[in-house]
Image (cartoon, rainbow, N blue to C red; front, side, top):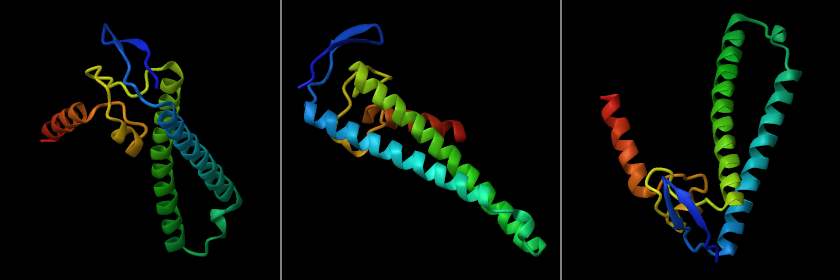
Length: 138
């Protein structure tokens, strides 16, 4: 079990007693997901570099190509965002702060971390964040 003192939100506390096997399982999940995202991005970039849009015969094909390219770029932005969250989670594991809510400093439930390894907020704080976002959207 991991039990380390850390300072969160100005308070010193013991981290949740997460089993080392659970942390290693999460680390492996994150590393696998990271590798898959990097490979997918490399494949997409290779495919795009091999395609010449001047080979398209008409305007409809050009429009379709432009739409697909736009969609690919949006997906790549989302993948980059997720990749950054994965890298952050791996760093937190290394630092011993993984599993601590960034908002309130409480422990994040292990079941939540196993389901969403990049989670940085406990369920309560995540729900409050989503409520605030909903109100702001009006």
